[in-house]
Image (tube, rainbow, N blue to C red; front, side, top):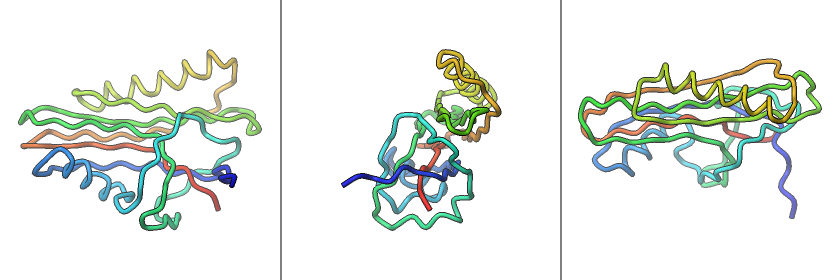
Length: 158
């Protein structure tokens, strides 16, 4: 059985506190809109000519296997900043694939988002591909007790 190539994607994010790291992660997935699915972590290639849509426009099956590229990090030090960001590089030639880069760190979002966007530029440079635009989304959270952040590119097909 061949899996269809995704032709749409959505950038999502979530942050949450929980009693445990796993509970915080699970709650961040719910906030991002993918909490009732099974995540299939993908390498970071955006299929050619894929279109961005809102997560609300995608009917993800509950319990379904959902392909994503994602960044996540948690923390248990009160007051600590945690951030995750996702960036998608769109090529000038829509017959070529784009790239998806993800990054997370125990630092404010500004630096995490700068790094992930540069990762897209680098990915295009070593592919000798012309970059049309970068779309990015990130989230930061200051840990209260046990926090988690999550940013992803959800790949799907219509």
